[in-house]
Image (tube, rainbow, N blue to C red; front, side, top):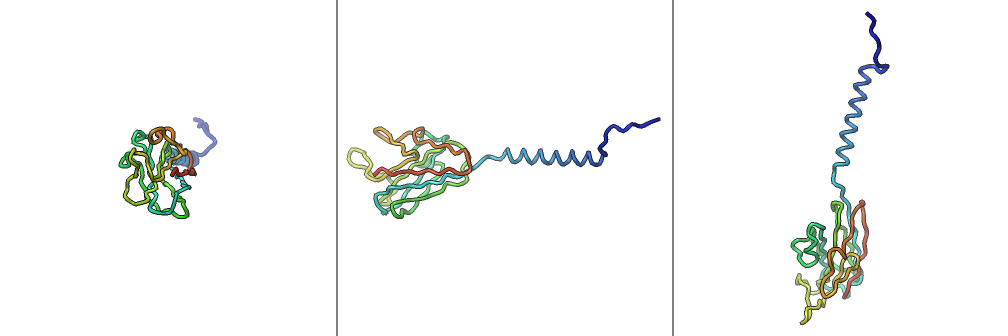
Length: 160
């Protein structure tokens, strides 16, 4: 009886290669199955003065109807001191997706947007894309920014 060699690769080397390829396949799957996250670096310019605080809200597309008024539905809320009429802030570990950012210059630190007798705000406001609304705040879609890379930098100019 003659035994023919089926492969030129020894069985132990073949098993080793299969094991290595399996580990690489599993690790690659783990890497690509992780949700991708990034950060949004925000520079806010044009505060009328350094009084009070800047209140920044970031909304995700899940709660876009809440933008910018329903601060309890914001994805993140941050209060920053104003220096040299500017604020810089980084929203970190954000899943890739669509967001909108609003900024309120809370000059008297009361946590509310103060307005005059007919409802026009008399404290500075701003939003991503420098979006403006007509007879009210801008919509999420006008202020929408898309995070689809590790880092996104934006500038917001305040309206006083």
